[in-house]
Amino acid sequence: MKIGIYGGTFNPPHLGHLLSAKAAVEILGLDKLILMPAGQPPHKVMPAGSPTGEERLEMVKLACDSLLLRDKAEVSDLELCREGKSYTVDTLQALHEQYPEEELYLLMGTDMFLTLQNWREPGKICSLAHLAAFARNESDTGEMLEIQAKYLEETYGAQCTVIRLPLVTPVSSTQLRELLGKGNGEGRKYLAPSVYGYILRRGLYGTHADLKALNDDDLRACSLSMVYAKRHAHILGVEEEAVKLARRWGADERDARRSGILHDCTKYWSREEHLACCDRYGIKLDPLERENEKLLHAKSGSAVARHIFGEDAAVCDAILWHTTGKANMSLLEMIIYIADYMEPNRVFDGVEELRRLAYTDLDRAVALGLAMSIEDLTRRGALIHKDTQGALDWLNEHGKGN
Image 1 (cartoon, helix red, strand yellow):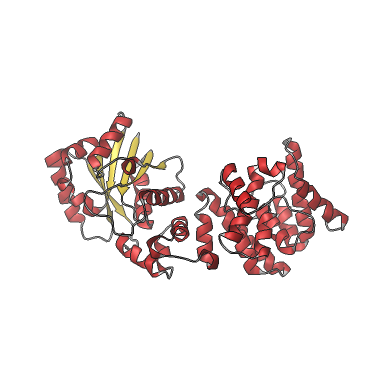
Image 2 (cartoon, one colour):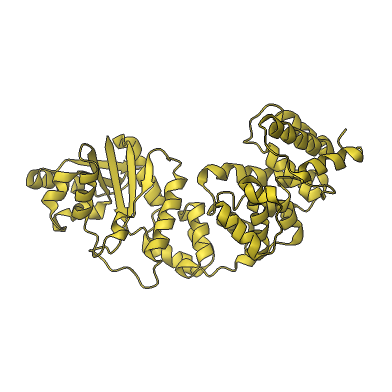
């Protein structure tokens, strides 16, 4: 098995890091990629005001997740947990002991590769891992890389590979931190949305964003930073569908957009986190909700929308009822309910009929969605929430579901 190790301060991890990591997996045919934020880098001092090691680790986890290489890519806290400076030779030795039969590849940028002979125990590094250096295609350092590779091979018996990267907009971590500190959103284009959202939520790099006054782009980034990347397409799909439906039926498009953005923001919380949030903000839960995380995320998500992001009552209520529905649903609540059910990424029997009805008869579309949900729950032997049945009964009693 080929294992790539990509270390660095990742302060913050940006799109250049992700592009390099993905290229390494593809070009080297890696079976596993380990991203490893450094604890105390031996070659430089962490800038004043840098995030904590735990915050850098969390950003790297979000960046890694955004690669959508869940079976291949992972993050290690090995160097963060180790006391003292983070020497590469120590890391490689530990990984060699963990994976004694596997082939290790040490991934690094051009500057690191060109100075490797100055690192601690360069000979041992070369004996423990194949060296893979990143180089941009437009770079004029090609000849220098070839000379260095030959030197390392002759001096230390190293195995070297140069990975040519496509042209990307260059930005250093220093420049990116400065851009983020300006607070004008210019730095976002160099970051995965989830990483940028985490930076905003934590107020890192001098961003100090007012979370209760975010524009749509920043709110979206914050929401995406709270869920796994595999959920991003669904959230964006619900947002897109909600805005279209709001336009079709005359609802407030801004409220529809922000409801869609936030509706699943607590989707991956633990049951304990949901309950603590609901208890803190006084959201009443019935016994079925307390035991069912699929129902809890609508409740905690509504609380987060209101108390963390300062959304208005219409948005919070649409999030609150987007899973179960309820009797006397507002127009926005029905739009978010059905948008969640039939957004473009959904694939199941009957979804095309739901999509057709959503734009021709919204009441019937919601009623059909409720009936399909009840049928599915019944088939699986699951309990049906009283509000779901109540919502369908309400539509049928008023002739809206027929």
